[in-house]
Length: 93
Image 1 (cartoon, rainbow, N blue to C red):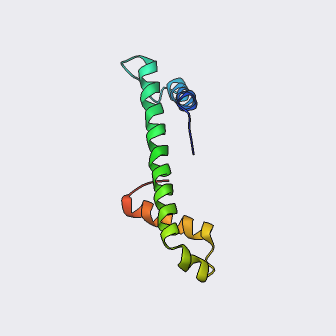
Image 2 (cartoon, rainbow, N blue to C red):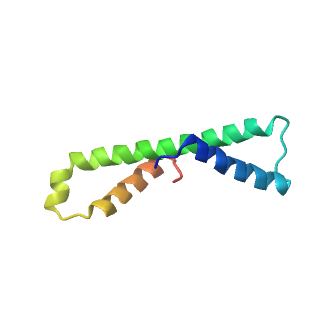
């Protein structure tokens, strides 16, 4: 999934505004700095998942013949492998 920086900043503003309004957070710096940091976290997490997706695709491609011969559902196998790798790496998707 491609998330543009502008959308990540917009989502971050929504989150920060909501938390600020309910007084769940306070900060000693400019709001924009906090918004930028949260946006970067969003972007970093999406990159981690994109990288994992690419790794799973490459792994399944390398086993393509076996998958074709055994009539395994590609999407189901993709999700199973992705979940297994995420668990092994301590990732929360």
